Image 1: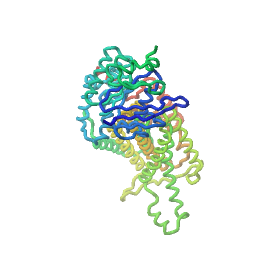
Image 2: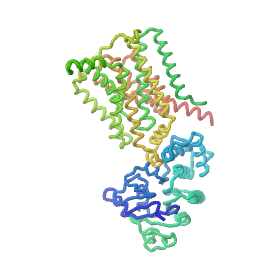
Image 3: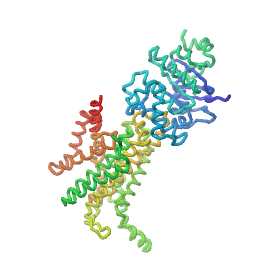
Image 4: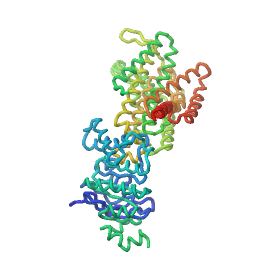
Length: 244
Length: 339
């Protein structure tokens, strides 16, 4: 089986600071990968390089058999990479339904041609809101939402683009235990639909229960990659990340 | 309430315009046309500014430059007409005399082209800048363009240029008062500008513009090609401002850089949408009518110099009382009533 995402030896520096140093990462179709690392280890930079928000200086990112280097973020979204942001970034001036309309209009349309009538669009928005349990608030504005609802909106909007790969960047930080369960259930359901998911998270219990494989970043280098149970016992990981 | 179709909307707008026109014609006061022309011109300018500033959230301080480019492209074509005999051999000159002088609608299209191209160029150079940096860059562009015009002798340089306006226009055997003709043209431009803004607002493009205003990073992540949309906005916005400026030399009779690039245009094009409300096409329309009429009234009763003072005071008042403009105020009321 060929990998869906192939990150090949990519590096990124900000001035003299090396944020990513020769990262290698492969993700198989349908896989649930957990990505962990201490603050400032380069997790978000890696996500930004995969999604096109930042361009890597060396190495290359291949997705679904195509090289994505140099492509703008929106072109990568069109090819099937979606992400949620660490801090939710909803479109403040739009209702929840309209928030989801954007990826439908700009990504799904662009990919398949203008196939949806206004009614179809509304139905799709409603389905997506239903999936995350926000259907009743379709006409509300993002400012009316609680933190956990905001995270759910963020995930729903990423899902609206019908991605092959979803990167959830700390979508559970700052949530209560039951809210974390909520988001986890949602992610597992998405995974069961065949979507490949990379979960970036600090909350170890969530990462351990979700991930089939775990990769660890420390100071821009990948120091471990493998079965979650093995990785957390790896002495180097314990020393660098979990603290000793 | 069901939304009106675009055709119905533009027909209604034309009908309202025709009514205004008939009303003014009936009174037979040239001044009414003269004053209303200015207000219509500001409707076009404010609507054009709002396409970039209101929908996309990019504040353009260089509106006067786009307006002046439209005006000066007309002046250049008019001057070109005067030089035909000196520049071309007789055969070519005869052919050109058949084409020139160009009718004003053609001048308007030319003004739109020039300002649209400059808008595109400015967009390409500056759209990586955000917020106040973008605003400063547009201001700088206006200064550069003004310097160029001041030093371009062909269009009059700093001396300015006189354009002799005919009293009447012969059209299909009917004589039309020239100021009425200019008024009718500007009315048509206002209708086109408002219809375009309204169409954009309801289209995929309008949704895309709004995502740029709200959060560009999130917009890209949703698949919105932000750079392309921003270039569409700067081009459209610039083109409409150029259209508003193209008939201006005929209206004013004497054009000089200091008046065409006047602070008045830059400030008014920002203040009018802000006062009316920036999220909808109605905002610039309401703002332009309100502020434009107040200015015309003040010009006649107090002095023309008080214009900018009025704008300043109203802008301050609105920023405090209704930061989302009149439209925002009304929407807020309606929402409160509902809940």
